[in-house]
Amino acid sequence: PSLLRAEAVAILFKDEKALHLRDLIRLIIGESGRFPELAKIFVRQLCLPMMQRLRVSFSHIPGWADLDTEILARSFLGSIIFFDLLQDTLHGQEVMPMNKDYFVNTLLGMITAWIETSGGSGQENRNEKV
Image (tube, rainbow, N blue to C red; front, side, top):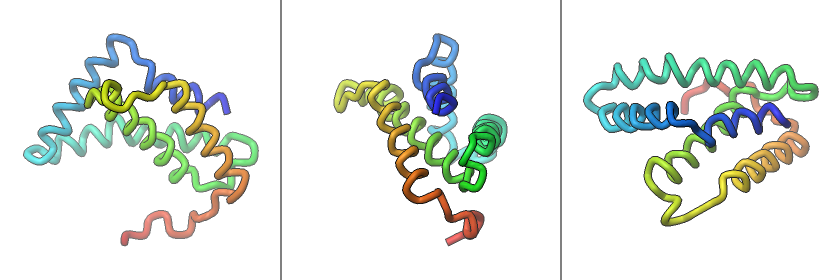
């Protein structure tokens, strides 16, 4: 769906301002062992609202209302963030290059296939800790 594509493009195709955010993320990750409260603030203030916005958006897509939107949002966002970390932050584009458009198209295809084949069931154990 176009919503997912727009979210992915917004994260992966950054402008100059977003590059400063990458530097902040590097710093927070690097210092999260010494300053766990700083990392928690980052998660609460940036990651959690993004996840909540995605969950709400997903729940308004026809046919997706019964899906576990938290799993969908975490999987989608986690894939994009890992791709960005690996390709750009860690300079992996030079070691194991992958086209961003190809990545986004393939990720969206996988999500669509998952929804069509499984119905996305599995909400009953969402908050259970293992």
